[in-house]
Length: 407
Image 1 (cartoon, rainbow, N blue to C red):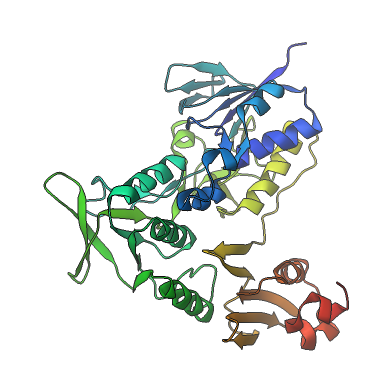
Image 2: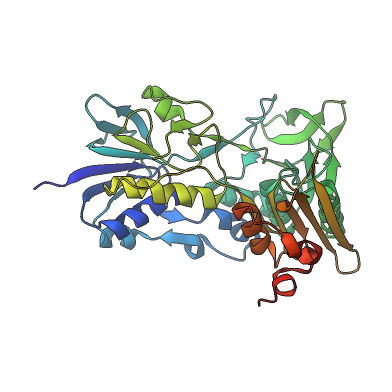
């Protein structure tokens, strides 16, 4: 009997993880074709920063090399962006004219970097920080230019700034907000982080709005102009101001899109033959940009593609554990706190440690850690499981081993 045809659009971490889960459940169920827009096999996008600093190469961060696809009988079509889904004929069309039929389709198109809609955003020397091509362009620019401006004080912006500084550039970070990593840290932890990065030579321009990017006579960036009229010289500008779900292909196929490709708890779109996972997805109104939720989605999608029909994705409680330029930070849940909550804080300025735990009633609802994240996983477990603190409350700040007697 002829196998059903599964086509995967997107060769990133979410789509390939779904295939790994599917192959573990039923390796022989489908004839599988994977389309990748990039010329590279699946690599770990989280590890682009060490490639930028020169600590690692592309080869070091590849997760599934081309031999892996061959070993599993998967047809891998690299450097072939998909331009059209013909749902009536159940066909996928690629930019090079390739037409591939499907019985089931998995969309894992990821996200695209948001580019500020300001004059000059298309000048040479204005880059984003999203894929290995971006990193290669940044490395080339750092070899011949001196002044870099990174727009965005989130994780990607700080990693880009650190990488370019490591390569000898004079780097300034422009941030619209008043504190760095404002989605992952509270104001006090963000202040500690900024002080530490400033001590390493990075400059910060906070609460600044970019109004225009200015170019020279040859069409290359030369400066940034802020809303207040002030200008700062720049040979290289990196946009790191967020991502948007990549939904254009789904929209052209008339799939329902609302801040992402809308999926059910079984990771199916409004067309039951088409599944979607990863950063391109909107589930219960939420688009996730962290790896853990994407892998949870992959497991559920694989369960249904394998015809098990039991998996359900109910959403994710997210935590963020980061090493920002060598500094450990962690946050989970409602780490800001508010009405009806109580915050317990510990600050050790000598060792550069800050901890904040947010309690509501008899439960831990949020945690923010800077400099010492050893107990982050335990705090996250308490938050996720809604554990009653009872006698733990007074010893909570001491960590898991001291509070529970377990090591």
